[in-house]
Length: 120
Image (tube, one colour):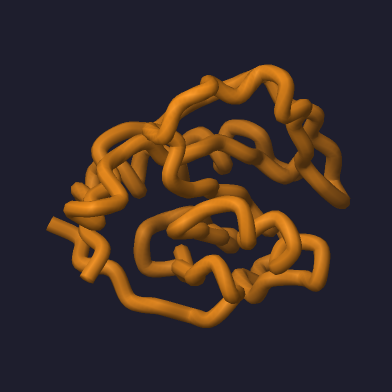
């Protein structure tokens, strides 16, 4: 079962709150074999009220980027079809909805299926 520090998820949610009413996008760093998220990776992104995107040219060329996190300011943490396409690239994916906190953050697999992670 995937796990992460609750404070790490709360930090990502605080960043999402700072971008509101725009969507926010960042990445998770960690270890896919141990199924642990260890860091938030912030990269330059384009943010608007309807979407957030990034040029993949700025992603590190290694296997430490294991997931993505983004916000849905509309209060819905369910993935869109575009989200599900993006999820295929990462082992763990998260969507936070307003109000932004760990309890309003849903986690999804590469297949777009809702999963549970352990917050420690």
